[in-house]
Length: 173
Image (cartoon, rainbow, N blue to C red; front, side, top):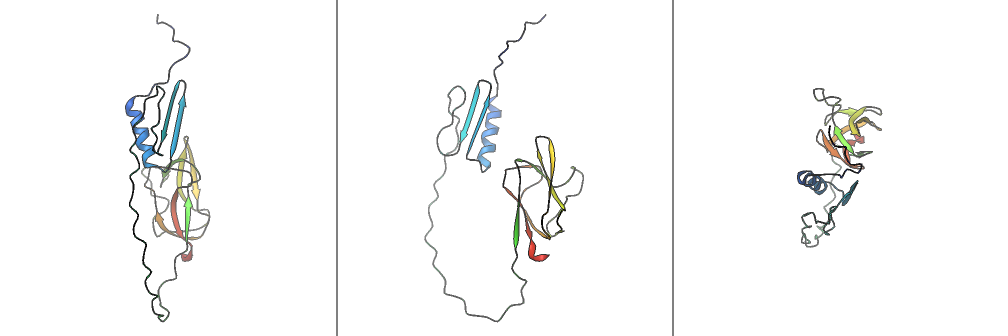
């Protein structure tokens, strides 16, 4: 017979899990993250202060690197007026942003064709991608008519709330 477990179990994370978490935060636009689980508290901040773990040990995060300011740009003289060109009208790009934090999927399954590719025409209601959040698959649909100009996220990559996923050229409608 085994001894009964104590009623208060301590949360345990190994160092590799914490390192993965730090790397994920460093690559994301998040500036601060805090995880509280049972008696463990992990706080990661990109603002230069050393975050603390449950035992009060600092977690190393690389400090921001100062970037030298460039010299102010010199305005070029205005170009001479030229006859109207026969070029295409300027693009009107609409940014499609992620409505939630999750994982971006371009297709309904790993072996299926992507919902859209660059250059595809879309209509309102056309499924663009799936954002998985907490094991729920959320289809993201186009709200406009246009052409896919850019896809800014790789398949199966994590996305943040408000992150731009697609740019749709609405002038191509």
